Length: 310
Ligand code: DON
Image 1 (cartoon, rainbow, N blue to C red):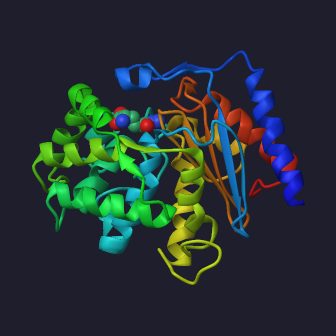
Image 2: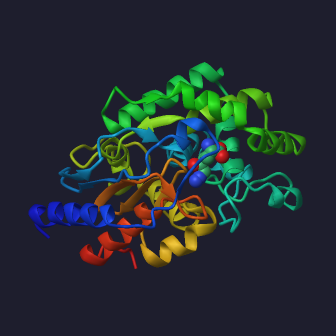
Image 3: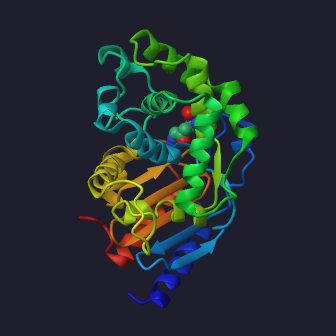
């Protein structure tokens, strides 16, 4: 496929998404997300040579929400290695992203790091040697390093709204603390988790951030700098495939067939290993909290490129 072909495909899909009537429902649990216009759609692909293909609202920043769970998992594996897996599992939950039910019979150990309870454990792990402010500094520096962009920032308004409405997440934190699987004060762990969720990025920045997952752990295609090992990269991609879309993960694997991670801001990061890092964004969500048009767009992309891993 030539670069011209790929740019044409991205533009065609973006034009097709503009015609879609079923656009899903924008997240409304906080005003900062509820006020985002559902008419927007953006898409960026970065290929293995580092070339960037982009269309629509690809430079508009949005709240990446749960997509950060991929990056915080990468950091936690770097910090504590495989001992992480004594505190969080590696199985799909088949439950909504904020569910508490499995924690009761499973001794406060979340099914995986991509549901809220699992990402709260990851935040707790990242606080082991740091004050919350320092852990957030480390996180921002990591995100700036993987994107190569120093303008990446946390949206403090979103972080405050997450905090003001985060009763379920606080319940998850307290419940896991009762099982001694949270090691820091719950408010500190949750404050850190809420700030992670509130990172703002555009599709272009998000696709840049996903390059290390495309390149077997190297920071970008044209370097030997390594973020994580090839083996760990493969394992993170496996988790994205199995758990990246919560109780919609099976549907995403069936329709798209790429490792991917969604967030309630309407973004999806998908990775075609060795081929491309792809970010799509459209704020309207389906019933599982995944971007309706984002998923449609990725399905069309793999139909035209043959990039499904299957
Ligand atoms: O913690 C929460 O519930 C929100 N910040 C949503 C996280 C998220 O994106 C989950 N889902 N798709």
